[in-house]
Amino acid sequence: MKLNATRHFFAGAVLILTSLIPALLTAQTPTASLSGRVTDPSGQVVSTAKVTVRNLETGQSAETRSNPDGVYTFSNLAPGTYTLSISADAFAAKTSQVTLTAAQQTLDLMLAPAPVPEALPNAPSAIPASPSLGDLGFSPQQSQPNAQLQALLDKRTEMLKIHQRLGLITTIPMAAALITGPMVAAKGKNGQPITEPTSANLDFHAALGGTTTALYFTSAYYAIRAPRVPGTEKHGAIRVHEALAFVHLPGMILTPALGMMAYKQENAGEKVHGVASAHGAVAFTTAAAYGASIIAVSWPIHWKFWEKQ
Amino acid sequence: MKRMTLLALLLAATAVVAQPDTQWVIEQSALTYHMSHPMHQVDGVSHSAKGKGVCHAGQCDFLVAVPVKSFDSGDSNRDLHMIEATRSAQFPMVIVRARFPQSDSSPATVYVDLEVQFAGQTASYAHVAFQRETHGKNVRITGTVPATCSDFKIDRPSFLAVPIKNEIPIRVDITWSPM
Image (tube, rainbow over all chains, first blue to last red; front, side, top):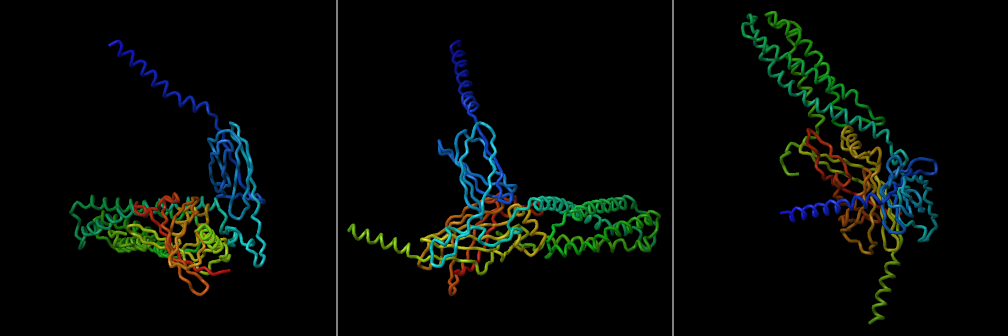
């Protein structure tokens, strides 16, 4: 029994020590990092430049690309001497040497434009080895990154996602209000005094209408406040979606206003009369325009969605 | 026997070297991506591709580039979502590089290795089949690049909480003319 306990103690001690060795070894290995910015001679950043480092002693290499700000980063490199190669479309490739110590080092790189090959007739050497993006004649507006525009698009998408979700959620109380509306209206038929316990129905319908209105305008806020993208001409189903807002937006103002009037009349035991009697028709028109607006923005709808694509 | 082998090798080498250097440019193009969703089937097309090809010493190098925002799906709102989802303001171009051996014959199908830069990522597609048709001096190439959203780390846009399919095949129809 005592022997077993001793064995277990030693086995445990060995296990702990063994598990600590890699951690200790790792802790003793210093690492370095290298980063910098890639620019052209005019100081403009060069993104997606391919940057490669190769350790001259071990032959190990790593590769990365400069980000939209032109910044490249290598981390966890062993200290030593490296060759650093960099290439980018429309620029001459560049190689340099760098010695890394166990610290964070910075090395900014400037690329010169690729030389234009001389077009000598009948000279095979005049043909470049491989074509580059600079050969294709795209304008800087087409080919240069624009971080500000990306941020604008991100914000726009985020706001329109909220608009879409709230818009879809709005359909639930809207549909319920449409169903409960006629039930409420039926109570005051022929000017008879309302004897049925309609107040609960009426209040429920009014609550659904209020919820619909609140959700609708919150959703509309996100659509209206979503940033516009300059230089974009609207075309396609989105124009129908927006045009329909000229029907359902006034409808969503009128419907609750008329509804409040009708509510007061119903509560006073009167048959709904005057302009308030248009409440139902306006509500149905608004809902129809709203539904059409959702269908328009979803167009083209692949109806046979159950089919294998 | 050795002499025959040497002669054959020499002839083969001469045939490769003797292949004329040629340069090609895009005459016209239609690149079409296809996006699938349970409720949507959308095609976005661009006719704005520019490209150049160089065949030299038995090797052909082709480069095709197209601005991402030139793709038109028929709805500007959807196109703006696509530009956002593919981070195209930061990475505005799709750049395709192709390399294949120069051939004297004119096969109906050519197999090409492609390197595609898109959305800040690079993906390789090996042995992609393209149909080849000759129209006078021009050559028309058609085929489909089997691209996927995950190849380029694109977060798949969703509609009604259902994301689009991962596959976004790109149909290529390019007519090249010699320079």
